[in-house]
Length: 178
Ligand SMILES: Cc1cn([C@H]2C[C@H](O)[C@@H](COP(=O)(O)OP(=O)(O)O[C@H]3O[C@@H](C)C(=O)[C@@H](O)[C@H]3O)O2)c(=O)[nH]c1=O
Image (cartoon, rainbow, N blue to C red; front, side, top):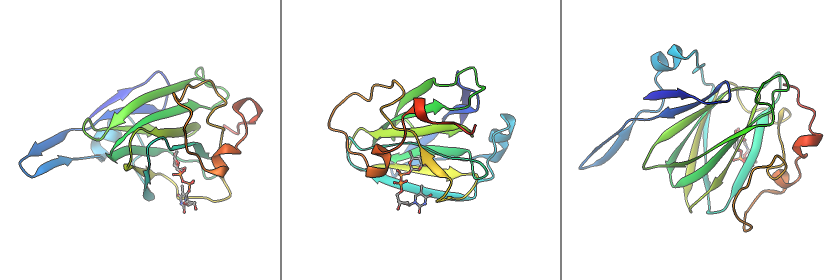
C-alpha cells in the first residue's frame, strides 16, 4: 500500500495493492507498520459496513468529543463519490472539502482523522463501504452536518437520504466542538 497526504491534514489517501489471479483478487487494507510511518492510529475498536443503492447519499457524519474518532473507509464493491469536510475551527482548511471517486476495481482507502466530517454518494447499486473506527459507536455523540450546506455539488437531483441526514444543521449554523 502507498499512503499519500492530502491538502487537508489528518486526511490520507491509501492506494491499495490488488493482486489478481485466475480465482479473483486479493487486497490488503490494514498494515500497522505502514500506518505507523505516517503516525496513523490503527488501533481500531469497531468495524462495520453499509450497502447502498445508486444515488444514496450518507453524511456528513462524525462523532464529537469525548467519542470523536478516526476512521478508515474503503469499498468492497460498487463505486462511490467520497467527500470529506474539515470542521476544525483552527485548521487552515476549515470549511474546505476533499472529494474522490472510489471504485472497487481501483481500490483505495481513505483515512479520516478527528474533526473531519465524512459522507459519500453511491454511484451504482450494491456499493458496499467498509469502516474501521478508533472508538466505538456512540449514539449520543454521533452527529452530522447537512450534506447540501457546505458548497459541494453532489451532481444530481434524485438523491436518496435518510430523514436524519436531511435534518442535520447547515454548516454555517453548526457550532463545531473541534
Ligand atoms: C454508524 C452506526 C450506525 N448504527 C445504527 C444506527 C441506525 O439504526 C443504523 C444506520 O445508521 P446510519 O444511518 O447512521 O448509517 P450510515 O449513514 O451508513 O452511517 C455512516 O455514514 C458514513 C457517512 C460514515 O462516515 C460512518 O461513520 C457512519 O456514520 O445503524 C449502529 O448501530 N452503529 C454504528 O456504528
